[in-house]
Amino acid sequence: MKIECARSDYDHNISLLISFSGWLVLLGYLFYLYLESSGDLVSLILASGESTRAQYTLLILFAPLISSVLGYAVNRRILQYQEKYLKANQFKDMAEGELVEIINSLIVGFVNALDAKSHWTKGHSLRVKHYCLMMAEELGLDEESRESLEIAALLHDIGKIGTYDDILNKTEELTAEEFAQIKKHPGHAVEILMPIKKFHPLLNVIKYHHERMDGCGYPDGLTGRYIPFLAKILCVADAYDAITSRRPYKTHMSKEEAIHEIQKKVGNQFDPAVVAALVTVHQKPDFDVVINDYPEESETRNTAERLARPSVCEEMGIKPYPRAVGSTIGGVGFEG
Image (cartoon, one colour):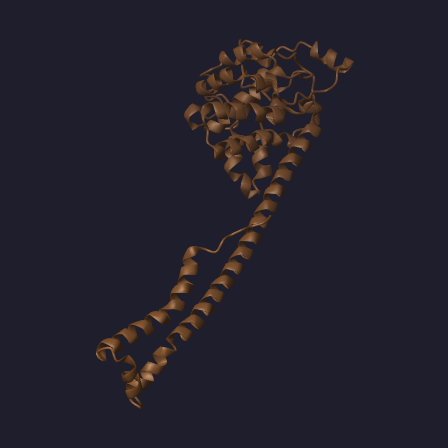
């Protein structure tokens, strides 16, 4: 990384002022002598002889030389400090650049690890990031918020690394105990990312992306005004991708069906402003320009998609939804 920094005019002027100060002193003194001698300046200097004034006069005659030497010395010292400052900032910028590269590599590594964990959800984080950024732009979020949301979207499911593979890839209805394990993944994500200081501002966004407006979400059952706004955006994007993606336990919905399904839960599960942004951006041409990476066609998947699994909430008198639409235990929330 190349760093360029021009020498400031202020520093340059200091050196020149010191250099010319001697000339100013000399000219001022000569003008004083001129006035005192009524114009016969040469005679006054010659007549001064061995007087004290002659000694001062000799010193003042050397003032330009002395000031020039001082100005040069100051200029050299300024240049030395500038050079040290530039080198220090260069190393700092290089270190920050390397840190950013390391963090980006960590993010990619985390996403790849999660994709390797369950091939059914491969590409999910990238698609969620895409939807989040489109909604963020529609909502007018600033650049810092968009960057935070982008990273949070990529890492929102990283806690599922701590979930057993047989639960993530299960093609049958989850038991209450299994769903309790799934609900731990936001907390696991916080534990995984906590040692990385740069991720601290994102932790609450990731932790609360399964909270609901009505307080029936998890892990803490927060109600609408207590849920971070970025988490609300992530929640909607996560749900949209979950219900439009193929899973071993359900058929996927079309884009319009998914939008309609999400709109039905405005106010209860999803933030109205965020859903309104999704409704707007899903009609844009670049909304579908995103990785759509799920497993290749196979008899196993075709068989799995034909499995009909009633939700536990059906036993509670609540309309059942496929698991990815938050149907597992009591219709808590959409599951990505």
